[in-house]
Image: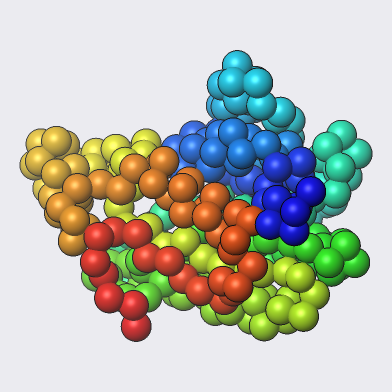
Length: 264
């Protein structure tokens, strides 16, 4: 086995949060297709089972691990179960996240706590738990799914933007800490992606403005410089690249996926 082959995802265990639908499901399928054993983590067993079924139908290996990533005790049990069944986790994809849009004065303390728990603390908690094992084995790949909001500001998204900036900063510091231990940490920062989340956002806009939901959805797509939604498979391809055999020199980076938003 060559060094390049040994550093790829094939034969390794990956854990993907929010793996039941949308971006997370696409990432899980891509990793399984590349030969990884994939632990599917999320709060909704039914959606996780559907992702697992699609992976198994393609001769991949997947394990359903229902878990609320904001529950610290549940995280410990989640990792214990996943590693006992699939082996040491060497690829971590922090995909689970919560979107939120509201004017600053209508953002509550409860909103702050909720978004920080999911968008910042959960990725940090998982990385903290898995980092020592990755360092001991001399190999680890951490990919955080952030957003273009990690690099620019948007009206009515102060809280969401703050959490994604925090996630991007965490990624850079993880990279600095892991660089001599065989661990890389990178972020994928998509713009608007064609997912159920966008459908719900369009419905909310429609309810608040009276515009047809399809018009609201089309307007959201135009926020991406490429003039359309990013697909979940495009995000998954970026993740697969960052955990691939030739990715070891890429560390602490944020890969923007929307067709042209300039990094800042």
